[in-house]
Structures are given as structure tokens and as C-alpha cells.
Amino acid sequence: MPSVIMLIYRSGSMVLPFLRVCLTEEFNVWVIPFLSAITSIRAEDKNIGAYMGLFEGIFSAALFLSPLLGSFIAENYGFRMLWLTISLLIVISL
Image 1 (spheres, helix red, strand yellow):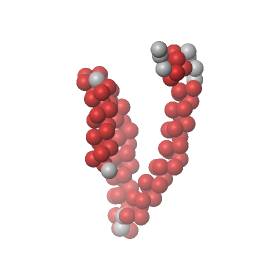
Image 2: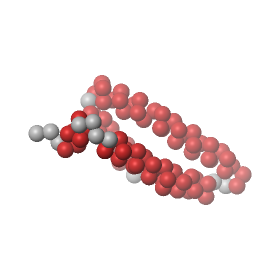
Image 3: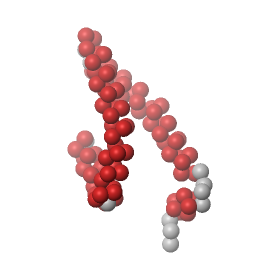
Image 4: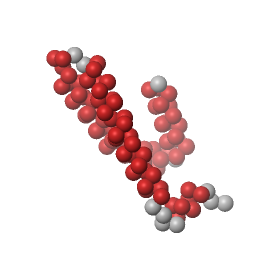
């Protein structure tokens, strides 16, 4: 029996794309300014530009590389390995 999410997805409904956009926008509105504020508070006055540049560069690289890396892992090693890799990275970052 297919799951409800797959039935919604196969029916051509716009529910899942709508939820994805809503969650992405919530992240943009609440998390990014908070992280930028923490970065600017931790930086000294003389090198705040370097800190903010490094923060934005790493954030932009992550937004670009994560879909490429994730799809590479899923295609070559399977989704189980993708989720294990993501779980390991979360544990390491904690």
C-alpha cells in the first residue's frame, strides 16, 4: 500500500512543493539572520568583514555542493548510505 505522501506526489498535487517552499522560507527568515548575528558578535571589530565573508562563502558553498554530493551518494551507494552519512555529519557537528 503506497504511503499518503506518494499518493499526493503522484496525483500531481502542489502540496509537497508548497511545503518545501514554506520550510525553506522559514529557514531563510529565522535561521540565517540569527547565524549572521552570532558571527558578527563573535568577531572582533578589526576583522568582522573577514568573518562575515568566510561565513557567507561557506554557506554559499554548502548550498551549492550539498545537492551534488547528496545525489552522488544516493545514486552510487543508495539512500540508506545517504541517510547514514547525514546522520554521522549531524552527530559530528553536535
